[in-house]
Length: 193
Ligand code: ADP
Image (cartoon, rainbow, N blue to C red; front, side, top):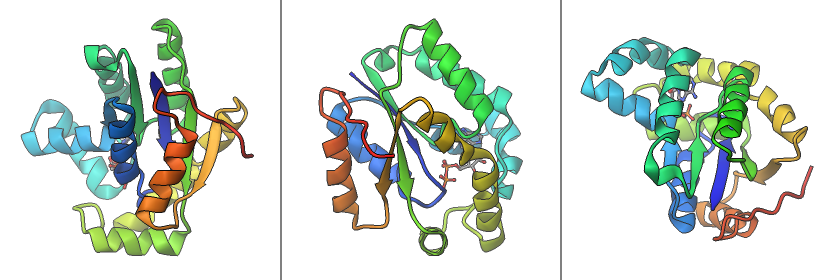
């Protein structure tokens, strides 16, 4: 039973590490960014609404994200755990998640904050070359992260859920650190801060 959230700036390697850890813990990896990109590609109503925000590096409006998350957490495969990557991304989304979890009688075990310095983030994103990995869009995504997502560090630290991990290390080293924090049975060790 693993329930956890991955926090961290764009380009920190959340997606890569979240995928590895979700396989290790055998829980679904729920990336709101991946879900949105799939919707954009398929041209669904959600995708058509989200597209412009994503290509500008802005957050997609909360109502769209909250519906998506509520629907995803109602699916059967999430009963034994989940790993959120890229959600929540602002305080409103975090408060919504707390309420939703209370409603369905679940709790989040740990919030992992993957830390990487800015210059490293920019070079990683430029090397990746996704549609929204253009220099001006990257700059905007970092600003949006600082203004809207970073306050969640304080939010989750206050709930004693936060563990910060140095993401500026080789991929395998980061994975090993994460495996040590999150046991296979989903119990997590929250020390640090
Ligand atoms: P990154 O971590 O590199 O920014 P993501 O795949 O998490 O990549 O997000 C890509 C884009 O998708 C974001 O810039 C934003 O436009 C949109 N997005 C993803 N998750 C959310 C969310 N929880 N709330 C609002 N917008 C989101």
